[in-house]
Image (cartoon, rainbow, N blue to C red):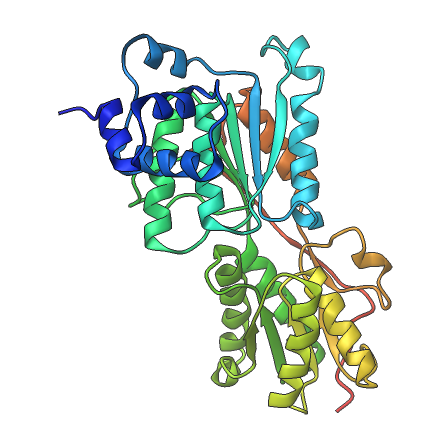
Length: 356
């Protein structure tokens, strides 16, 4: 038996009229009430029928771009590149249709907020949705995400993943077009660079443990250590934290507490590396004479850091622009639906052979 508007109202503890107002978005509804209604819609998998269903399948000129943190240049560069494609004249002169309005949705790294934005974009009949950054590795969230993607796909919304891995082969479809990075390969090349300089005591500052980007970069680092016969101490010399400067500062001090003879620290990204450098300077340690430091991403400030940061360059703007074109249907999907960009090692002044 199909779920009715009354069923949703009963689950949410509101009137059918309130449910209708929330779904139509044509009347103000208190925030807490709105969330209860949307949660009931999701739990019951309610879908409107008849003429309303036909209306829901018609898309608007809205494109949603989901980011973890718009203040982080990693996400800002990709979001800006996506948005530039939305407003470019190519979308008109190529015959691909009118320009679109890109709206950046800042999730703050919250899985629940990511799901809520996807629901709201479905209600707004978004023409496309671009999800940027690493995915959360949690079974419940993955299942809920797959449900949202199925609904967006059924409504005619084009979904593109940018900077995150494709959905697993065993996960429920649909499987969106994906523009991703070789995080494992980049991290492995960074570690091999340090090993080639003679470093044997390497600390690693990883990102949040539940993120795919964190896992893939850590796997690349440890693959290089294992090949060199140095993986035995990897767990002790790994500290997880956020992708921010404060985590780099605190993580560097923790690594030095665990291993005072450390000669190199690999940071989860360039922003974390800045925190590492600050902590080392406060401890009176020189970079790279006493300890070498590496980042990841090659954000714009990396080359201007003191010293200039050895890192892995990811083509963030190129990937974001391609995701934008895919979202607009202005470019054919890559073979197999997945385009993977390599990260290039950028050797600069923050790394050198160990002094001891």
